[in-house]
Every structure is written in structure tokens, then in C-alpha cells.
Image (cartoon, rainbow, N blue to C red):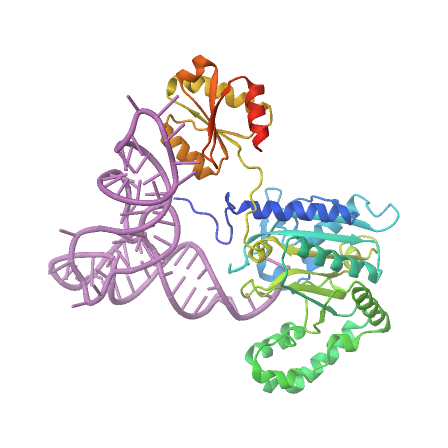
Length: 417
RNA sequence: GUGAGCGUAGCUCAGCCGGCAGAGCACCAGGUUGUGGCCCUGGGGGUCGCGGGUUCGAACCCCGUCGCUCACCCCA
């Protein structure tokens, strides 16, 4: 037996409806905020990701699905969506028009990680990018849109966390100061912190070990170390959010795992997700375009994890497009008529179920009941001779004989919808 | 990469101290010649993850292995 690949999943009837629901709601939302869809390839040149995400990040170091194709090119299954979108914009010159370019995408991403709750090797993201504006209003509008989205899909328990990690001007200074301070308290910190101090000092701020906290609290925070431009930008974003009455927390420990972020970063988290508590993550990436060889173009974007939204969605019936009619022919002599009747009903737009195997009436009505189909049309040779159909309302159990011409049947169905 | 838990029917799981592989749900048939839901009776279904070891005898004990899940790490 050949099994599915670790960290992938088959989305089956019964659960797929939640995915479709999210995608439909997202499309509605994006349309209202002026976003157009973009679809980029599922693989790219490896260099696109190593240059944009950062060669020292976990994603590039150990999580990419990279392979050599028959042309001896190094290709990578996309681990995230922003770099490909920016690449496509540069390549197709989408910055040419006036104003900001607003794009959204949805589809699978790939990272080689150990799967756990809310984390997969193939996972689905819905994301959007706003390119060509450095206005703090962009940052605030995107966050406001996401809060609106959460309301529309009825995820009511979440926290918005924002931070500013500075820009290419002020971040190097901050990092140097941070490194120096960490070095001073290093012997007091846990093993993880000692490791992080070398690889990613920002991560030390994120330590959860109780005994470390008094020392970590003495470290300088990102928001207190911003240059004037970054500080003004951050204040403007906060002010815009407050005007929209969006509740947020400043989390100076919020550090994103991709190198291209500058200034604003944000996350929306939920506590119903297991250890992976981020529903959405995003931020500003003003240097990304240049970093992959494009013009100087500012950007702000986010990605949300569809699997995580599905976990956080309230339990209710997401199924749409229900079957309406169950055809119950009595005996194989009637099956040819049943096939023709099913075709006629379907052509009239009536969702109709017809079992392929010949079964007893009892079994057929039981099947109609299990499938939740509201009406059954029952006919044997007697009915066909009289040009009638027994029309049964499965909910009430009432049943009447109706002339078998299509108009009469449609009339009976429609008066009962 | 590290750690823990779990693999028995389509699904959820029980199976004691090693002694004939089970239940509920689902499915099929009958009870009712052509009428669902409730009820009753019956039926089909199993490589007990896989391989080895111990034993008269292993789903059960031991070793190995594969898979899944959760957590660390990191992230959406």
C-alpha cells in the first residue's frame, strides 16, 4: 500500500467545505479592498528564496524542498508566497501603473519540517501584498482588513500583535547593542539562549524560561531603539489602528523568521491552535525588490495559514449545494427511464441523485434519508403506465402522485422549496 | 535534528496474569410483495503495522523497524 507523504494530507468531502468557505470569503474580502488575484508557479529558482528570505534563516538552511532538474538548474518548491509575487511583478512590470499594486494569492507552500498540530510540509496559505507605497496607512489597512476577515469567518478569539524591528539604518546599531548586552548576561541564561545568542540574538528576547526573565527584561527592546523614520512610521500605524478601534498589543519580542522584513511586523494569534498559535503573519519589506534585482519598490504583505484557520473555525455546517431529488426506480425495468429523468432534471438545474445499483425501495429511501435529500421521486411500472410519479417529501413523509411531465414535476418541487 | 505517546474491522476503541480476536457505530439482508427515520433478528467484513526473539502457546512479554500523533526548535 502506497501511503501519502509525511506532512501532507488528503482533504476529503466533509472537511473540504471549510477550505472552500475560507477561500470564498477571502475572495469576497479582497474584491472589496481592491485586490486582484495573481498565480505564480509552485517552484522557482532556488536563488529567489535564498536571497530574499535570507541564507542564514531556518527556512533556507534546512526547510526547503530543493532539487536539480534535468537542465541542471537548482529549483525549489516555494516555501512562502511573497518573493514569487514580487518577482512576478518585476518581471511583468506591474509597477508601471499609478498608485499601489494590490495582489492576493492562495495555494500550497512547502517546508521540510517535522509535522505537528497546525504544521505541515505541504500547507496552504492565503496571502496578499501591497506594492509601491511606504505609507503607514497601508500597514493599518491590511491589518484592519484581516480583523474584518476574522469577524466574517466568525473567528472571535484572537490577538493582534505588532512590532517594529527597524530598518537597514537603525537595525544594525540595535543588533550590535543587543549582542553586547546579551554577552554580559550570557552565563545566567539557559542553554537555548546561549545557542540563540550566536545564531539569532533577536530570538533570545523570545525565551520562555522562567529563570531567564529578570535578565531578559534588562535587554533593550526594538521599539525603543528605532531611528526617527521608523519611530514615526510605527506611531502612525498605531494611531491609524486606534482610529479604527482595532485592539492590539505591542510585542517587542515579535521577530519574524524571514530576513526581508523591516519596520512593521505583525502576527495574529489564537489559543485554539496547539503550540502553533499564529493564524496570520506579515509585515513590511521595503528592501525586498532590490534584493532580488528589481527596482526600489516598497511592500507590505501577509500570509495566513489555512489549516490553522480551519482549526479555529467554529463548528457548524459548511456544506452548500445540497442534493434536492432522490430518484427511486422500482426494479431494473425502470432504470432506463430513471436515467433519462435524471438527465432532464439536471438540465433544469435540479441537483438529482440516482443510484447506479438496483436496490429495494426500502434501501433506496434509507439512502435518501442518510444523504439528507429532501424529496424522493418513486416510480415502478404501474406509475410509468399511468404517466405518474410518486413524489415524496422526506421530511414530512407525505406523498402524492404527480403527472410525470417535467413541468408538473418542477412545479411540485418548486412549491415545496 | 531531539523527546514522548500510540498502531487491533470502513470509523471510534476494548481485549485482565500469555490460553478460541471482540463491542459500539457504519454497511447489507430480513421482520413489512412497493415506503426512510425508532425497534428486533441475522450477515459480510481482520496480514492485531512489519520483521525477529522468548514460550507448549504471543494482539499481549522482549528486541528491531516502519508509520502516525503531540511537543521541542521554528513558523503560517
